Length: 73
Image: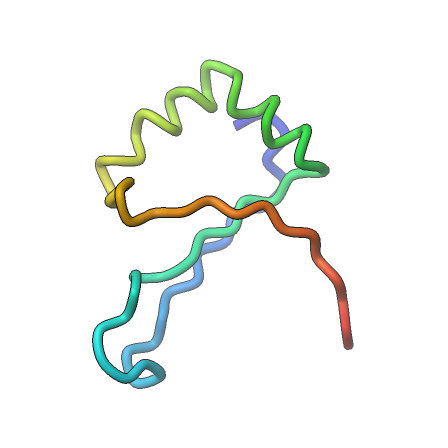
């Protein structure tokens, strides 16, 4: 997607979770701003990405969260 700066997949370690994990992991898509993210979604590439989601995740169980990074250490 245009403007995508970084893409990270965080996979849960089975031994770190008791019981059934709520999901397999967390994906991070890094953009310069929330506006840049929204603009990327509006492009043909962004629309193709959204259309592809059901091929590898359950949209009914997925959530998207916009976050701002705060470095502590």
